[in-house]
Amino acid sequence: AVERRSKECIKLKPRSGGRRTPVTSCCFSADGKMIAAAGKLGSLQIWERSKGRTGPRAKKKVWDAHEPQTETSCVRFASDNRTLVSRGGDHTLKFWDVRKFKKPVKVFQDLPNLYPTSDIAFSPNGKLVICGTSNREETGGQGSLVFINRKTGKEVQRIRICQSSVIRVLWNPRLNQIFCACADGSIRVLYDPDMSKNGALLCVKKKAKKRSAMDFGRFQHIKNPHALPLFAETQNPKRIRAKKRADPIASKKPLEPIKGEGVGGRIGSHNLTTHLMQCIAKQTIRNEDPRDALLAYDEKAKKDPMFFGNAYKETQPEQIYAEDQDEDEDEENEKIKKLKKQISSAPLGADATSYRKEWK
Image 1 (cartoon, rainbow, N blue to C red):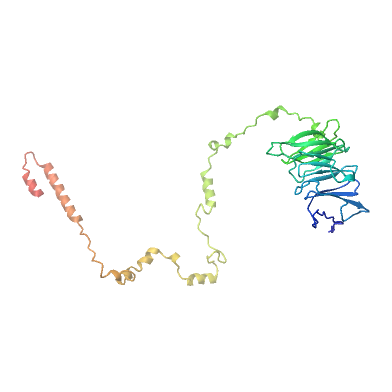
Image 2 (image 1 turned 180 degrees about the horizontal axis):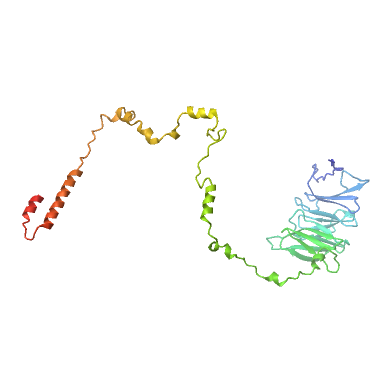
């Protein structure tokens, strides 16, 4: 792997004499002989390069170029290497003359900048400067693209681009088209039908695709009537039984004997060792009948109660069971039936006192 190292390291020193200050933006001049950088404390500094090297100290400095503790998002050199444009976080755009680098030549206010990456761009001929503006929700503004004439120092035009903020701008010299990247994730392209070439024009010049009459048809769901349960063929019961028979769970198929070594706690067969183990192995609870196991201790429990019988022998009264009265009730029922037969078969005018005596 190729080891990459920096050839030079330039430190942006603050006005108070500290060691360093954060750099928010920097750029090279068109001829590569100057480097401009902006610090977070609001300063602008320019270094000059000679023989491929940069001096340790900045040759030109402006400490109060923009408000301190605001991020100067962009600095750009013009093609003539004499004009420097800075886009400040204090919502301003300033033009500087490198030869008299003390005060700005022109200051443009009311250019909202809420993003640390908002930049500026020059037109291909270098006469215009463009920059995007941010959308302030409290004022209800919109993201716009501002055109400024560099020579006259006046705002030429302001075009509304989107409801959000315009952050990055690019004026492509070959296509002669302007690209605007917005905060809502969209990219807007501005072009001239006569002066622009290719780019967005390739899409605009294409003719719309001709649509056939079938494209406007309304597609509905296709239903197959034979797929409904009403039209489904009844299955052969023989096939249903064969399918269930093949399923060991549905058919409740018993376990097959194991051949060879045992698996899952089961002892295998066809082996002398397994035969001896089956003979010697003790009977477990699985092979016992719970009813027979309890009845085996019935007589022993009656003779010698171990758990609770001895504790209640002296305190519990003797059990007295009710007498069986079923036989007496049966005899009385038979007598009543006989009397009813005699009364029903007695002649008319018979004396009923005899029957009353028998009833008593």
